[in-house]
Length: 58
Image (cartoon, rainbow, N blue to C red; front, side, top):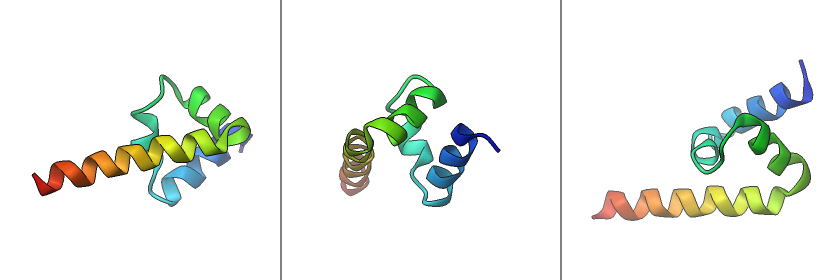
């Protein structure tokens, strides 16, 4: 298993892959964020989840 595959599997396992993937252009960009800019990845996922919760309330 490559590092990229392992990172994507972790994101799928914790249930944030889809939300995160919708915010970037590719799996490569997603793994780069995980590896080099984790705080930005967390920000993107948090923003996506907040938007999803807001739309469910409407």
